[in-house]
Image (cartoon, rainbow, N blue to C red; front, side, top):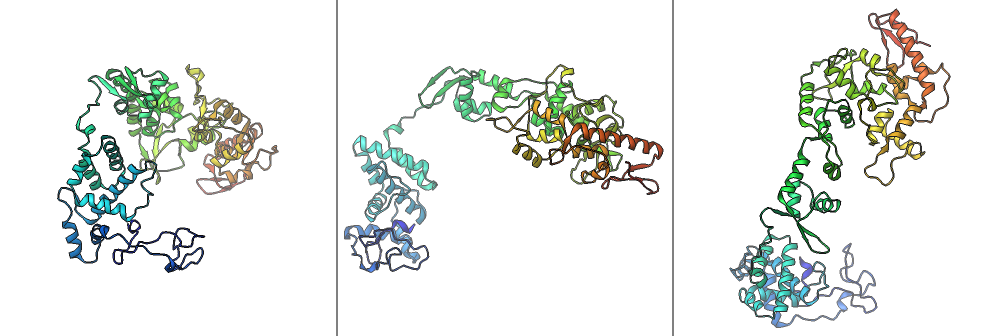
Length: 532
């Protein structure tokens, strides 16, 4: 606030803003307050500068402006009594901000290229603005006596300041002055005719940003009744056409919302559509604006009600979460839809339940561990009945995969995906946002390479304990980061799984030990040698 005072209201000396040395002339700053009496650049004493005085006829107005912030409350109150009652200014700060707004208006009128935020304010400009305030409303009448060109230019500047100011009281005072503008005395009804919508109205009805309306016009989805303007097009649209498009956009439910409601990954929704569990509601308009597919809302609600009715069981080794069970699936899609369809038709051994978990209030969607081992686990050559085959259902798989879907498909983490990208072993689509991968390339990589996470999940051991089981078998060096040739690792995993079945048949109580990859008899805790 003090930066606008270029004078001392006590001695009436005009303050200097730059070094008085004509060879320096740099702006005076005191970043460390260590050179208040000299220039911090050239060490020129500031007392050597020639001092000018404020003209005597300017002092009364400037004295009143300084009194607004005097230490004495009586002086401040006396200064506020001089504020005309016609101005809606109720405190010292409001008055000062209004004076600055008038100063900026004069400056912008005198020099259109001057930025009103960085414009230097001198005591003469302050005095002229104070006169406008103290003589109000006479000064408001004087504006109307100016030439039409000068007056309209000043009103235009005031309108700009009223839009940009952050002080509501200043905005209100300027709007009252602008009410005298002849252009504003005539109320122009810019509303579209009945039955028509402008671009902003159409955007509000469709629930999209105004910029998307122009995109719809350019793409041919929406035909305007009329248009105006060259650089910024203004359109008028038929209300019934826009409402019909809104009905199309709101029909059904988006795939993302359906996945959120069912608690499933997003890529499980196309699988449910392929198996006729959910009915698609194709919409080119929705794909263009939002890039999402839509499905029948009633079907989603039925599945959600069925899932909500599933029993809640305590955690035990009898159950395994679907996400953990699907880690044992490699080189093919995770069979979310196939498992749900089997459970709906009561063909899934053990069915589906929610296993209690401290991380999820409802629990985690789980299936019987034995059913997961026998009917779900396996690679691309598995003959599991619980497999999602898009071609057999008469549909096609989505052509691209998101990074999260690639992580699930290859049974790896984001770190491994980045590692593969750095070595050009797996590349995303170029010039496309958001990031996506070609499905055909991801499937080819998954069929050729197998991760140790998948192998460990199929043997029901921790990944770090996998090597204790497979170290006795020959295996070719892998890519790194846990990827090995599927032909080698699949053979070893199948051999170990066959030995496990033999041990289980011989000792029915035998269970995986877990971390170290060994086996233990559940009934007696008797240790057994590791297979191989």
